Amino acid sequence: MTLWLFLHIAGCVLFLGNIITAAFWKIRADLKGDPAEVHNTVKNVMLADMVFTLPGLLLIIVSGVMMAVQAGYAMGGMNWLMASLILFGVTGILWAGFLIPLQKGMIRHSMQSIRDGVISAGYKRASTYWALGGTIATLLPIVILYFMVSKPF
Image (tube, rainbow, N blue to C red; front, side, top):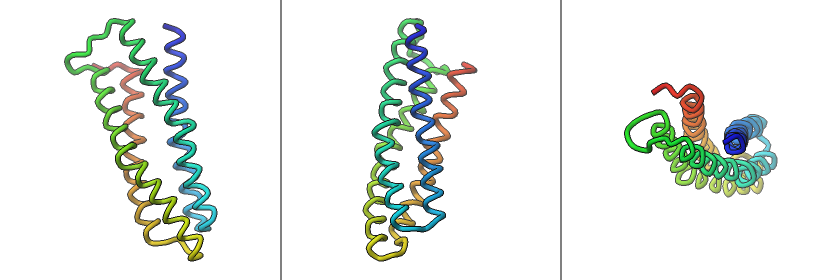
């Protein structure tokens, strides 16, 4: 159980740490307004998702399932674990179905911004939607973290 717990916490650190720091660096690049820096940053946000967020996600799922099975948690009814799983699923759908396509759009629009020398309206629009969706996709795992630690119901 100790190994699984360690892997679960490591996965949470990778997952939450990356989504928070990626947003930080993207916001800083956007505020600076340099099209080349913005383009480089959004490409690296996508890369960081593949290098940190995705492995963190896999560690969370595998270790979480293993610990739940070993502990004999029931998967029926509404409890902190089921609520966490639902929120985790919503986060995954939001990430895969909304944020990743927006990131691809931001990369494409930021490349156009480099050619034009100014941040494009398309980039600004995609970036705004990404910020809104990203805020939700960050807050949900924080709620899940609270449920995992406190087990309130």
